[in-house]
Length: 179
Image (cartoon, rainbow, N blue to C red; front, side):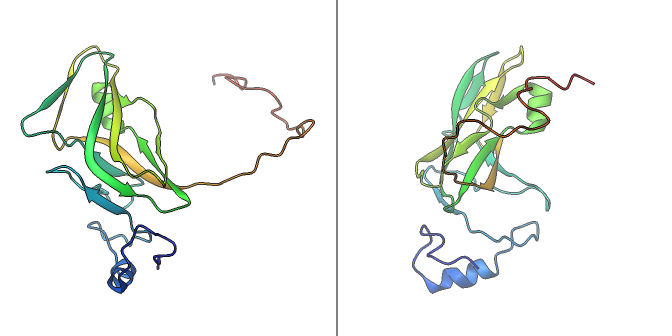
């Protein structure tokens, strides 16, 4: 069970603890971390796991009534979700492309994966780019990206005179060949 001390964004309310304890999403998978979400735009859709084993929750575009974004070939734009989220301390939100959309229409997340820090409280928006040769339209409610909540390891840099040797050494950028 997550307590208010572990997740300061939760309201100071004993009912939250019992709700979190029995939290089960619509796919029947027990959730272990609450994710505080505030809708800041009318019609914003909460992130949702589409299958029981999905690693990422789908994020949907939140556009004004009737507005359609047309993303020309090689154009990029910032697409709002209408949501502010409270990622638990010690975690990050990774905004990733939707693989089917990337394959079928060439639309991807430009700074993939985008990172949402646990102390960010602004509206979540997604930088999309159209890598196809055809324009793509984005409408309100279209699923535009995935949100994966992942733990973050904090490290302390320690300056050394040299690094230990490894089998790989300094080999990089294709050093193992193609096949």
